[in-house]
Amino acid sequence: MTPDVIPAALLFDMDGTLIDSMPLHDRSWAVWHAELGLPFDDAGFFAATAGRTNLEILRDLFPARDEAELERLADRKEAIYREIAVRELELIAGTRAVLAQARERGLKLAICTAAPPANIALACERFGLGELVDTITSPADGLRGKPHPDIFLEAARRLGVEPARCLVFEDAPLGIEAARRGGMAAVALTTTLPADAFAGFPNVVETIADFSDYSLPHSLPHNRPNSLDPETSHA
Image 1 (cartoon, rainbow, N blue to C red):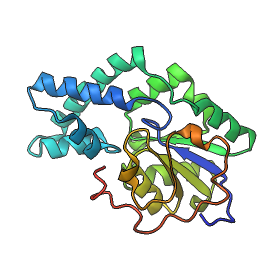
Image 2: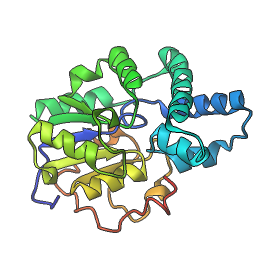
Image 3: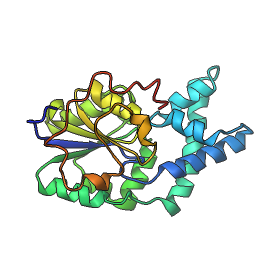
């Protein structure tokens, strides 16, 4: 996105971007590891897996296990998460205001998330997210997860907006890389990882609330081709 191109659509990651779920995911992974009797390096695990799907994580943890077993393990982890989230999950401060302002300005909106359908449903039921955006895309649609750009490109297709006119909001380097691969500009949020995880990337804000004045879309530089390396960014 060049400085003279104003976005026509905003595409949002969900976990850690719109909803304050990452601490709950961290806790659910800790419980999951404990149930299996596995050691758990909280900070290291969290940084290394941000933005990845459960199956991608579990394939690395258990390379010899078949997909059915990995799916069972993933389902258990997410069940633990939902047991916590149904009581404690909250929106990131500023979410409703940003979405409402975007609507008022005629922008199209999408949520593009790696979350499983049951987690998406929980967030939608709890906060009415489905009513605040035009579409939701995820790997459940048969799309590859981040850093592949598929869920962003599918959202753009559904919205009828060229990728170059989409602006992505992400809290993980893998998501920023997915946006870059899709030809979209992005804003990195430090709600999950510190700013140094996005070293070299020009558009970094603390939370979605910092974008509420819409000062960025008119001056966002194009994502630099090598602005983030998901391997070295520990995402």
